[in-house]
Image (tube, rainbow, N blue to C red; front, side):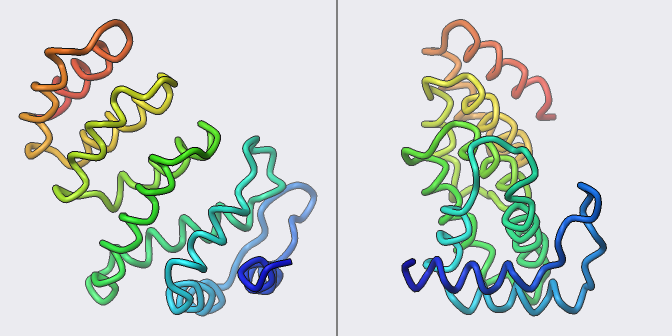
Length: 176
């Protein structure tokens, strides 16, 4: 195991195990401690969590998914604003990379709560992803950004075809 894998495993082992196949209650204090530990570990710790995601969401990686969601929620507070931009950047780097489409789509779904104008160009580029799930997920993030996405989406629509064109049209219709 690499040091990052060891650290990730140690952090995740602090979370309770599933109870009869269901997620157990997790103490907010523990969640806060784990979030701070991951944020303290920086990019390496965050990518370590992302590396632990499984392509098939069958519950075996629930702790990883829980922690990534907890990170997204935590950095959404004013006190954690400095971490928000960095987490969005890391998640977008990983979503735009070579990971399996279900993992990339999961990361894009989390980005809905983080992304802003800085991420627009890279999200627009994902509209042309080979997998329509990815382009749909990118369009959803662009909708969450709102009005600043309108012009780039309108530009992308000019070259779009098929399902991608539909996704862009739907995104534009949702932005008021």
